[in-house]
Length: 112
Ligand code: 5GP
Ligand code: ZN
Image 1: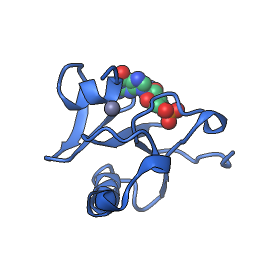
Image 2: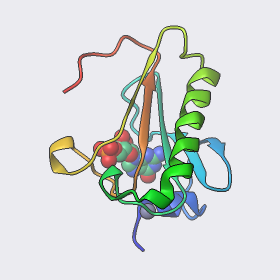
Image 3: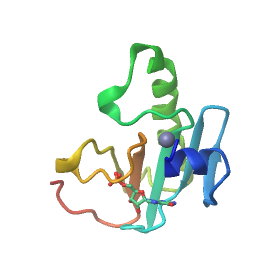
């Protein structure tokens, strides 16, 4: 499958890893829009939130806990941070592999 994030998850393309376990990977965004800009992905190919299935619920729950832990490790918990996931053209999704952005380290503007 020609998916850039699958290739990163499988180690076929390089990334600056922040966290990795059997089912999840977190790495720095190649084009950061904030001092901390980390992407968290499932290693399994899922296109977006719009295509998650009930069988993914446990993994997705662990993903949320991992996002929280990464944000804390990055020192963002006191001043705050933003977590977002895009689906489809109106959102500006450019990589069709589910990912959450963790953004922080500066005062962020309004959403939208
Ligand atoms: P979205 O699909 O939610 O719009 O965002 C995709 C994000 O992936 C963008 O912020 C973009 O900078 C990032 N990105 C795209 N290709 C790569 C890559 O090869 N490596 C890394 N680390 N980030 C990437
Ligand atoms: Zn993929």
